[in-house]
Amino acid sequence: MSAVGNGNNIFWHNCPVGKPEREKLLNQKGCVVWITGLSGSGKSTVACSLSRELYALGKISYVLDGDNLRHGLNKDLGFKAEDRAENIRRVGEVAKLFADAGLICIASLISPYRRDRDFCRELLPEANFIEVFMNMPLELCEARDAKGLYKLARDGKIKGFTGIDDPYEPPLNCEIELRQNDGVCPTPCDMAKQIVTFLEEKGFLQA
Ligand SMILES: Nc1ncnc2c1ncn2[C@@H]1O[C@H](COP(=O)(O)OS(=O)(=O)O)[C@@H](OP(=O)(O)O)[C@H]1O
Ligand SMILES: Nc1ncnc2c1ncn2[C@@H]1O[C@H](COP(=O)(O)OP(=O)(O)O)[C@@H](O)[C@H]1O
Image (tube, rainbow, N blue to C red; front, side):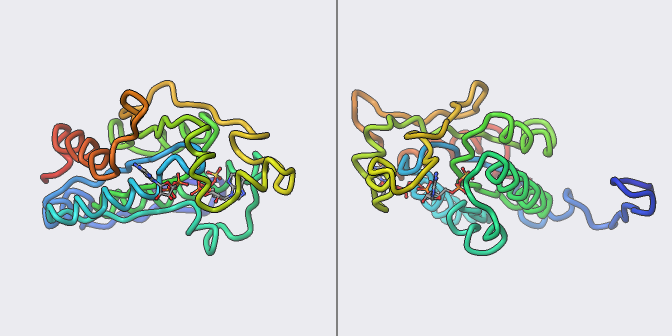
């Protein structure tokens, strides 16, 4: 046992069944696929499509969706920069546990601040954090406006809405960038397959 944490009386207890043993059972490697982008850029859709593609390949994944987590784990948080940072920190820690369990954890959150995303990257072993940038123009996201939130933000009925009157910092170091080709957005299935190809090439889909 070794002493860790902020307090003096906190100890880390090791378990003999570890990540490698679980990965061998599952025949995959645990990792975090972190999908970032504006509201309406297609994060949740790609996350679900990716989970389905992986399932078809016999690989176990779990989706942590920002909207869904705000119904429970993060229901006490709003959208101020500090709240968003705490939201991302918590999800990063949960994602780390899922990856340690051997799962392919797919986190889909706006996660607008580079610093917050980089914090989550640092939580994981090298190369186990795969940042996917949904690089869709604001105009496209706003035209979709699936939840009517852009309209409310434009009408001043929501303050601090990402992309309208709150910042979004695009990644500088992402592993995968998903974008339109000649003004056409690829299908969710095609984008999910692009991520699957990356995971295959990096060896995450075998123990
Ligand atoms: N002010 C403001 N700004 C941005 N988004 C807002 C806001 N208020 C509510 N919503 C809804 O909350 C969803 C984003 O939650 P996240 O947890 O992903 O946000 S963040 O990562 O903490 O920035 C987001 O869902 P997505 O559309 O799936 O991104 C919105 O539905
Ligand atoms: N590749 C795509 N092509 C066309 N429409 C899409 C695509 N991906 C998502 N959409 C649509 O855009 C809207 C927003 O998608 P969603 O996944 O909820 O985005 P986000 O999670 O980033 O807010 C939904 O109505 C969804 O059906």
